[in-house]
Image (tube, rainbow, N blue to C red; front, side, top):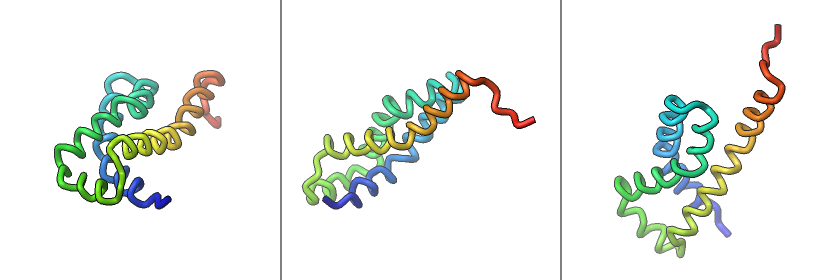
Length: 101
């Protein structure tokens, strides 16, 4: 299986996903920003790709990839990215302040 089309699609939706996650983190806090990064921001990125790069769907369709496969692979990549961030947030909540002095 060639992973390049999946990564190319993820790079195309990443600006939409990151913008939505950062805005939600700014208004609702870092924990909700990570939650939205994994769930709602991905749908926003999918909608942004559909709005701005609509003609590129045919490229992925010609490669034999469905929208569902692209969405699923993007969700897995989001989980891989957010696991270290989530662990850091949980550790900081449990332990407390990470100051060195």
